[in-house]
Amino acid sequence: MDVYLNWAILLFEVVLAVVCCLGNALVIWAVWTCRALRQPALCFIAALAVADFLVGSVTIPLEGVVGFHFNTSFYGCLFMCCVFTLVEVASVLLLLAIAVDRYLRVLIPLLYKSTVTQKRSWIVVALCWFTAAVLSFIPMFGWNNQKTLNGTTSGNSIIKCSFFTVIPTSYLVNFIFLSCFLPPLAIMIGLYSYIFLTTRRQLRAQIANDSTINYHREHKLASSLALVLVLFIVCWLPLFFMVTIRFYCKNINVTSSVIDVGVLLSHCNSAINPIVYAFKIPKIKETFIKLWLRLSQKQSKPNDAIKNENSNKNNPEKNTAVTSSTVSESVV
Image (tube, rainbow, N blue to C red; front, top):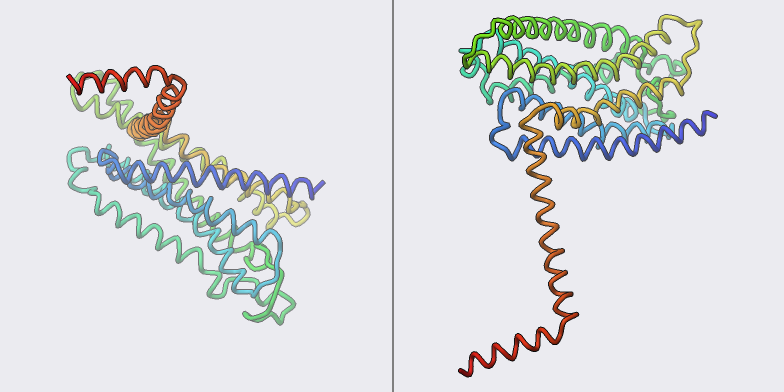
């Protein structure tokens, strides 16, 4: 049964990898090419799309390789496993940056544009990735299972590569989950609660002016981004709960197959996000529609040319008549 489940998970992971790459590549392309989308909030969304793209292009293929438990050096296996953690930590920090950006948009609406510029937004994105890299690669500097593997494993020793073989569960639970996941999550919930309360209070005032329209727009955008956060929580919390139960409750058997299902659910989040952007964020939706219309028009033009060519071949008498009339007109 476990063999069939593993193959089913592998096939689904391949589909997820393709969907992640295509969907998030479209989001990155939309933000990069459309100047109307080059706003601070959408810069963060583009950076989050990059993280989701890396899930499909790097994380899933590497996890597939690690899943076969091939022989490699200890630190080679450890490096690949740290990359898995990097994308998740970067996603959390980018989601926190998006929440702070929306909070500032509501807190200081008049000073927002001068305070939160595009340049500063990209600096924050770079800091998020740098911080994620530092936190994720801590096991490379000592917090790993090297000493617990038969007590004699060195960095050059050949082992069967597996995530929990080289990454200690204490690092995942106590550091990543309890320190790097839950606190930012609590902060984000508090920020979005403030945003919704503020925008609703302003909208209930029913003052027909530009500020009311702006608050209505911010409320809709915050709702869309809050949905992205909710989906992230739904997709990632089960995996963290499984690992936490496995670490603290030794009498409860959490099998590797169950962990694999949790990992698969976490990858689903990266495939769902572009769909949310396309349906919930109007500017990205408009850009996707324009792209679709442009591609459909390019495809229709060659088809029309082929149809005209075929019709000319099927009507030689018409072509001869046209040619003779043209010759007669030139003689006259």
